[in-house]
Image (cartoon, rainbow, N blue to C red):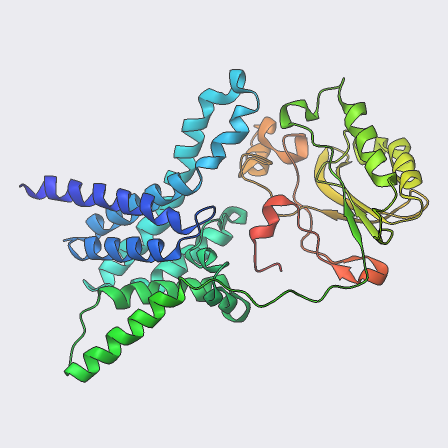
Length: 383
């Protein structure tokens, strides 16, 4: 076997390991499989003769992992498949391939530092931090997120997702490192490894949380995405939400203290929605309502949530600030607008503009709440 063919085999094995590793994330929730796949790619990494070969292994592992874990990104293109289905493979492959560059960088730097695997304990979580921050961030699928439904995931409350990612990588490194020393020492090392691996398989259950006397009603119109903006069906969906808002409580339940409508729950921008807000307020009969709405300010559009008071007045507004790249805005679009490519700039009507940042919403007796609109829920640093 030539050196070139051996390198290609290692690359293929790394891609396969990445595909397998994605079984650690939802909906499978198998962190032990993720740990085993990560350990396998570390063994492959050890055979890399140069930093460039290590980078190729890291990229292949990341590409396989993201491609499997984010295959659901095809779904939005299937809403109108006649127009957009052809874009799906390019968009998914381009996004996953681009994000795999972070892992390629980590493996490259690690190999520059040492031929051993231990530097990855630090540089791979550092690369994940870059992935979560650069270009507004794209932190889906961190290793630590596989622990959410298992008791080690409670460590997220103490050291956050990056600290737990470091611990996860450290455990994988411990699995592949040779135990040295006396038989007693070896037994202690392997005992710690077994306990660490076993911890990943134990579900977390802390009992049922205490239930308050507050009642929140969540309303959505059960509208297919392809029908949501159909002018003929918009009134039907709006009336359906009004009826659910005004419905009496189920037998034995208290009246709601708060009513939640979904993201972009109405078809009209906020400045043209006074009539719709009046209907919503009347249906709520004095109960506060939080609903998603598009808001415009001159040429800028915002994906917003508003708190509606009992007299249809907008009490508080929150503008989404973590926007989905290419879905809600074009990266560097505003910069491109300055050089004449205005069709890509948010301030010239292309996509949404980013809000000023995370902000609490005062819900009265229910206390304060942090609005998170869709994609924003994955940014743990805001929470």
